Image (cartoon, rainbow, N blue to C red; front, top):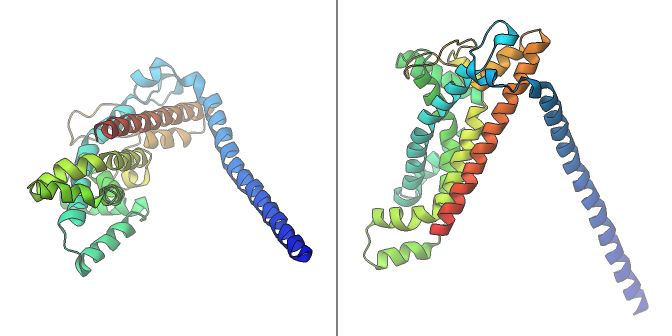
Length: 291
């Protein structure tokens, strides 16, 4: 009996020691990432905080650092989001609704689902090539704001479709059955019972997809977005630039003043991302209260 007790006690001690070692390992792994991120943020803030002045938002890019700003890049980013967000939401959520609620479960649906999941992991440069072939050359949209927004819509569509499907799939079957039992049609059930419950998850996926889009540079470079735009786009067919491309342009300059401008542009981009995530939290809380 004592032998069995001692063996059991040793096994418990071994498990506790293993748990403690794994806990330390996980804490170290997390700390490395957090410390590296904090170091990068501190370095960026130190370099760019002096350039965060009204001139940064009111002046156009210039060959002289003391007269340079990011007005055209900031406005171009906002315009691209205003075009991309409703387009990607309508097509992405619409595709998710069809696949989950209307599409027949079969080989074709599984093939479409497999392709969508695969496209969600395709490198962004591939979407830039696709946008160049379709929107710039086939549809002759040239290097316009509309071509850039549609290209970025292709980039985020798979992410939105997958996240919307997961949110719709998470709605309990009992909600649908209760709606059908009350005599509701298929669309009434989807629009009034399923979508309100799934909307927090859908909005989270959309906001995260938009956050990824505004930080991408490769697709826009492929379609020919300009690095120097000293004007604001007056229509969707005008040339444009965005914050990541402007930051890339400043980083390519040898002068230290342009490095500081690039750091300030990164700070602005980070603030924009935080605002988007904060808005996503507010929207989620609003819809969760209404469900």
